[in-house]
Image (cartoon, rainbow, N blue to C red; front, side, top):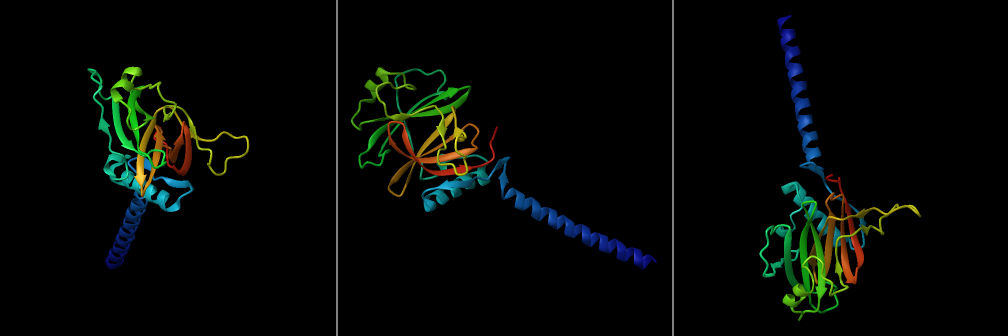
Length: 228
């Protein structure tokens, strides 16, 4: 009788160990999909498979390793230089003026691109303004406030960007979009410049080519679990 009880206890112990291993495997499988409360992105539209898959791997790698999108850690993204506006800024975080020169519209000629970062409800939102390469930044800053350049019709700023190439949207239905508090991150892949865009919710990431005015050519859509 004692031997039977011992065998029963050993059998139960083996079963419990197997169940524990199974739980660990399930846990690791789950972690592979969701990191730090943010689900991995999946590609929902692609007009450049190799490029879109490359960028998807970058964003999902960030979520896995850091739990957030960290553009500055990747060589693809444009590195900005601060602009000395001559102003004494009380809140430097919510009043940033940056610059760089690159061919943002892929026409073979570099442009002066000014990026302003200002706060809306304590959250940074981006604007990009495009000028000819030989433009005088000091004069541009005098002509308009850093977050609202009035001297150009070319640029991207806070508004709604509809995902008009989103598959599965029925005729007459509203397209999903990114709204209001927007992060704009230009990047270079090969010889082509793109702009990565998302908003505070980070449910969607749009990667597009900048054309002219406010026109964009959407290339990739990624979708994940919204942060809020």
